[in-house]
Each structure stands twice: as C-alpha cells, then as structure tokens.
Length: 300
Image 1: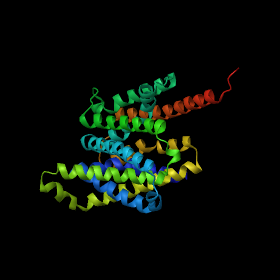
Image 2: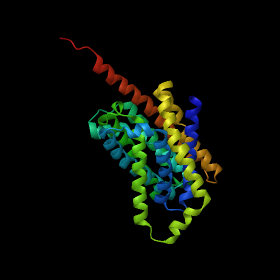
Image 3: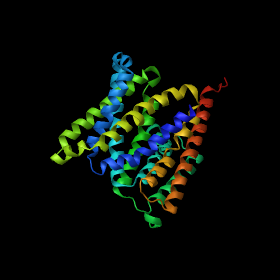
Image 4: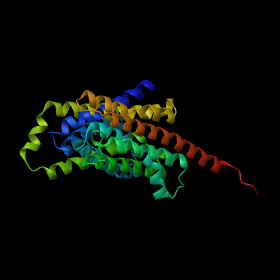
C-alpha cells in the first residue's frame, strides 16, 4: 500500500509540468473539461451502483463540493499556466499549514505555537521560492493564483470536516458527483468563453488528449481509489507523509522537463516541505489533545 501511495505522489508531482505543457497552447477550461470528463466517466463507471443509489443528501453535498473543487482546479491550473511548475508544486502544498488558520477564522479555534512555527517556516520557504534567481521577493500572477487555490483547498477541508457528514454518505457516489459537477461547470464555461477557432483547433493535438487521459485516469480516478483503500490499510499520518512527497516529485519532473531550480528556490522548497510536515504533526497533536479533552471525565 505504501508503494501505491508513493506512485500517487509521483503522478501528482508530474501533473504540474505535464499540465503546463498542455495549457501553454490549449485553453485551460477546455483542458479541465477533458480531464474531468474522462475522470467522471471513469469514476461513474467504476461506482455506477453507488451513484445510482445516491441519496438526495449525497447528491446535494456532491454538487456543493464539486463547485468548490472546480474553483480549486480552475485557479490552480491558471496558476500553473502563469508560473513555473516548480513554484506551483511547492506553493500548493501550503494548504496543509493553512488549514488551522482557516479553522481559527471560521470556527474560532485556538492556534498553538507549533502551528505558528510551522507556518513561519513555510512562509520563509515561500519567500525564497518566489524570489527570482535569488533576487527580491516576487509574487507573480501565477503564484498568487496557486496560493488562492491552496487557500480554497484548506477551506474545503475545513468545511468538509466540520459540516459535511461524509461518514454517513457513500464516498464513491460523492466523488462521482463531484467530478461530474466539475466537468459540467468547466464545459459550460469553455463554451461561453470560446472566441476563436484556434481554441478548438488546439484540441486536435495528440499531446492534449494523452495528458488529459493520463491525469483524468491515473491522477484523478486511480488516485482517489488508492486513497480510499489506503485508509483501511495504513494510518492517516503515514498516508499524509507519503503523499507529502508530491512537491519534491514536482520539482524533479519540472527540472527534467527543462525548468531551472536555483539553490535559493531549492532551499525554499525544502523549507515549505518541512513546514508542511511539521504542520501535519502539530495538527495531529492538537486534534489528539482536543479528543482527550472531550473524552476526559469531569468532576462532579
């Protein structure tokens, strides 16, 4: 199971440079339409019996989360288009250290010093990653969109964990509805924003469909199935650690794809990864403490 989780991290890590290869020439929304159209077909075929029996609550929840997921991938993919794959891979992982801060804003939870330290390390890493060849801090449009996507991911995780009773829903049906919702939103937006024949012509390129199938099947359907199965066979902490290798693989694939990784950006990326791992550990400790407080007997 560990090997499968590492393979998921490899596929996700490769998604940044492969996506950038496509969206440099093809419209972002058409690419997302193709990717999630393939993912929706694959997941709904895989879980057709589950989707067919989906309750009204599951359907409404799936639609809502699908809208959220569409926002996440639209901002992320436009971000990849306007920045480097290396920056995108490192910056998107900041969603991990953003979660506790979103909980502070939405749920009024208290923040603990270890989480503040993890965030400080990750922010320092962000400053270094977004510095141009070791120069001053520069946050371009793509970097900003990736950070917005990371914040949306953190918000989605918080909202789902706090208000969505996923433990009482069919998770396979829920994901199938989510992917279909993203496909429909991006499809409609693609049609409404297409202004020239060139937008359609680029869809004929073989590389467009090869990467759409690769990310739609392996990066979405298979990755989600592996995550669902892994929950039953490994700890959440171990799964998070293995999937946390994604930004490192993103940097490796980006360099192989021709991008340059400066020493300063490499140090920044390492700090971001360290900050997110520290943040995960601190968050687990905070939640364990909260559970102990809830379960602790009260004196009469």
